[in-house]
Image (cartoon, rainbow, N blue to C red; front, side, top):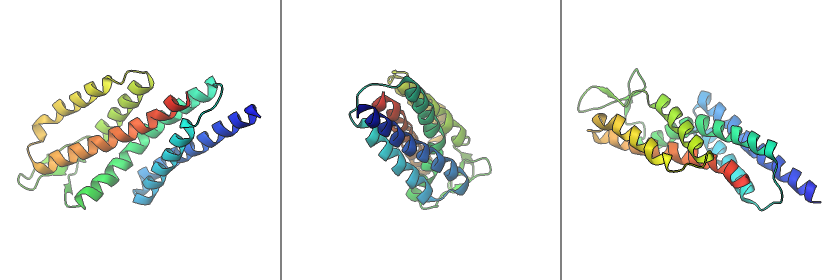
Length: 183
């Protein structure tokens, strides 16, 4: 009976984790709110399953889940951040040709490269947490803040920076919790 429960546990966990990842990948191309929301729901269900008590470990399953969690963190955080920023600003901010935003008071593009920085931020975050080094989050946030400091004069830029950073970090932390809870 214990073996059947373990198989059911890992099967359910992988179904929801892989479902979250597939929906996150789809969200990169479709950019619709319901797809990323569905990915978040699948991730949430996977976290609940991962937190369930069980007996025994499975090293191969744990390693596989860690790889899936890293992919969920890196891939899913971008669409989640974009969707949240769209909701928060109600599309009132113009996007520049290099992916940044155009500040109304000064017609210049700021916060360029946010998508790439976000990918690296989430990779570093999930890597630090899975490796058991949560203090690295302070370093990640500090590097990002110092690197963007000169661009945060305008309220629109500060707002997007804070919201984007929080959503990105929360998504990466949630994904990192999968192998930590299941391990």
